Image (cartoon, rainbow, N blue to C red; front, side, top):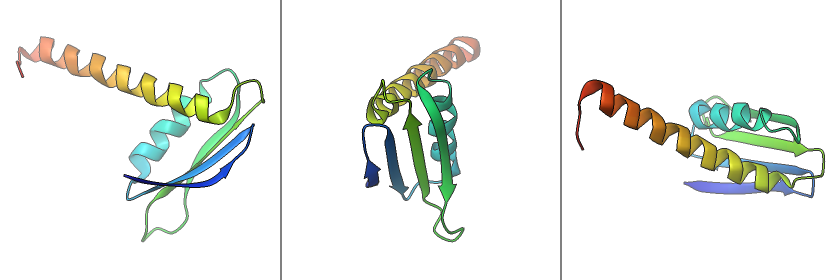
Length: 95
């Protein structure tokens, strides 16, 4: 995965996830919105033929936006692992 950092300040982070789509952009933006120090979290697709999401996270300044992004990624991973384990249990599937 290629990441382009468009803007990085104490309160704002704007990154482009080259080669990704709405799925990852939406996940990151929605989960960042649950963080108590986030004032804005959203993503856009600049051109429908390209499809790479540009994610913007703005905080209140008490927590850096890159720290929020790291928390979001960790939390997403934990949620995915829990889901996978529950599916394995319910479906009686081993790896």
